[in-house]
Image 1 (cartoon, one colour):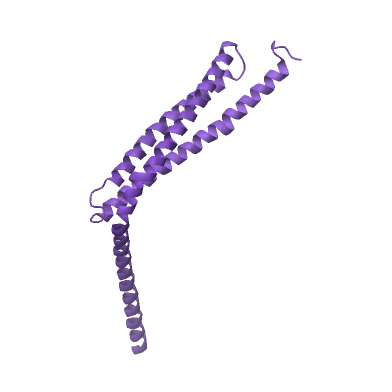
Image 2 (cartoon, one colour):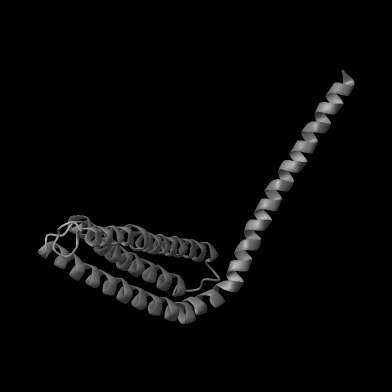
Length: 183
């Protein structure tokens, strides 16, 4: 009985010691992270307001211009198909409308990301408010991931769906000839 009690007390003290060390380790890790954020936030802010902002703005302008150019060409092509009552015109119109909506969503979300980046870069005394800076940085990164997702979605729409519809249309038109009669 005495051995069982001693063993139980030993086990409880080990668990308590490990539990205390885990709590202490967790607290020191959090304070270490805060100290690291406090020392590096000024450098991060300088990068966000300088080279990152410059590159982001270029990328945004170039992407929107490219997407708009593709949409304009697709829209013109679909209008010609509709005017000539060609097959796949309705399907391609739907895809063009989806593309237009995705471009608008990309622009709006890029604006939101731009605002989040500027808010992160302009936080006053980030070294005194590491938690607030970290939260703003996390929010900014989430908005950036949303933009990446939208770029993938647009690329998928253009690279897979629209491309295959145009290829199908091309095959149909070759099979029927220019007059619409089968060869």
